[in-house]
Length: 182
Ligand code: NI
Image 1 (cartoon, helix red, strand yellow):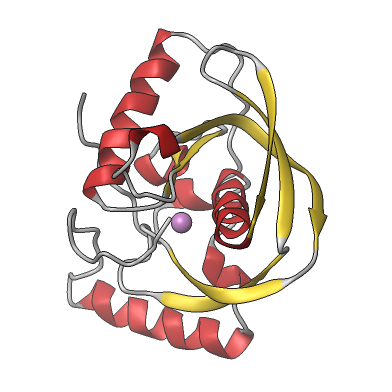
Image 2 (cartoon, helix red, strand yellow):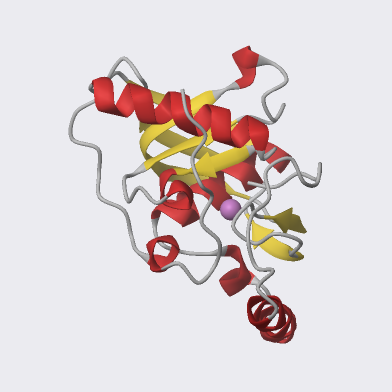
């Protein structure tokens, strides 16, 4: 297993819609194992393939951030098939180091996906799990979370990022920060 580089905002892969996974083969299983190591090292509660530079419709969600292996959810070709309610909570993203902001999400979502055995499954989540599922599936659609923030907040965030870019400090550092990011 290998750690992968986490791409930060500015890399076009993060704003490119991904392609569906056609077959759950050995290359996908290897990718999932590497992504899991990368997510644990980050640490994060979710990681989408574009965040490691792979434009495939695949993501991980693990609310324990790697602490409990049975918490890992591997979602291949996920789609939100139902949503209900409303929440607006703070989110962070591994591709936006140090950036946090409030984002509107449904309170409850149902997601259909393929698992690592190639079987179709459904999962329902609310509160933090609903936010994590929506955040990851957004990544697979090429949508980054700052585009769901208020226009004012987004402008402030972009200004901060541009300064960090100028100073050569806009990058992911594994193991830095213990906040809930995905
Ligand atoms: Ni993210």
